[in-house]
Structures are given as C-alpha cells and as structure tokens.
Length: 180
Image 1 (cartoon, rainbow, N blue to C red):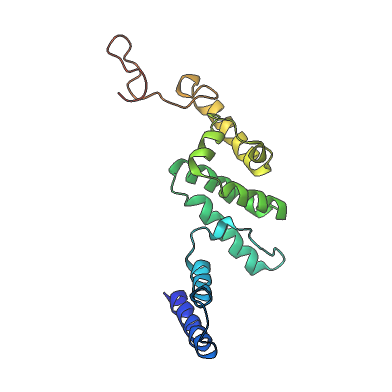
Image 2 (cartoon, rainbow, N blue to C red):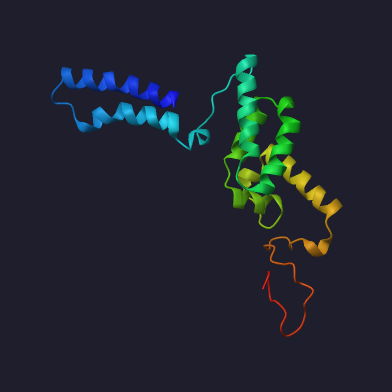
C-alpha cells in the first residue's frame, strides 16, 4: 500500500505541473508517467526483464538471493517448487554472476515446459539445453528418477506420462490411458 501511495503522490504533481505549463499536452504524454510508475511497481513480468545486480555489496547480494529463492520455491507448480527450491537453496551461495544469470533464465521458463524438459518427456530447445543451471537440475532429477523410481512408473523418453492409478486393469474394459 505504501508503494501505491508513493506512486500516486509522485505522479499527481507531475500531472498538475505538466497540464499547467502546456495546454497542448497530449493524453499520451499525461499518462506515460503514471503507467511507468505503476508498471514498475505492479507488473507481474518484472522478473522477466534483465536483472541488474551487484554482488559486491552484501545487502544487495542478500536481497537478490532471497528474491531468487522465493521465485524458485513459489512457482505455483508443486513439483517444480520442491525441486527448484531445494536445488537453489543448496547452490545459490556458490554461484558467480554468470550462474545467477543462468538461474534467472531457468526461472523465467514456463512451468509445464520446464517440467517436461526436466523429466525427459520432451527435448528442450538448444538455448535451454546449454544452460548450466538447467543441465545441473535435469541431471539431479534424472539421477533421482533412476535411483528411486521403477522404469514402469516413468514416461517413455519423448512421450508424456499418461499412466494412472488403475493401470493394473487389463483387458477389454481396462483403461486405454490415464485414470479412466
């Protein structure tokens, strides 16, 4: 609420001073400062822009790490929240500037695509496949799948996972795919 109040209090004097100084001001020039303020404060795509960060200052480093850990743990896709959140928590303090940029690139990916790429259901694009953070997370996921999940419960590489809880029913009335 304080940021909204600050945005309004800084935008209103600009509007009043610009309308008093020039009567020929266009509506576009009147609304541009307000939209700029609100888009910086309330945009949901703030994190998709390039992040300018400084790793020399401990306070800015701490804030950046907290922001990235929050983004990795609160994606809204439980499986990715657990996988990415734990991985970032374990590795973020040992990352350099290029590692953090790679992490931001991974965090900007869409959840369904990222999940399919990490679990081997689909092949990732080359730009994602060369990302060192993505490769490390995918290796961890595939290692955990190999060690803790039987082959029958996993999707065939390149195919989506469609098995359900009632796969044991075979025959004429059995399901063809999923939980039917």
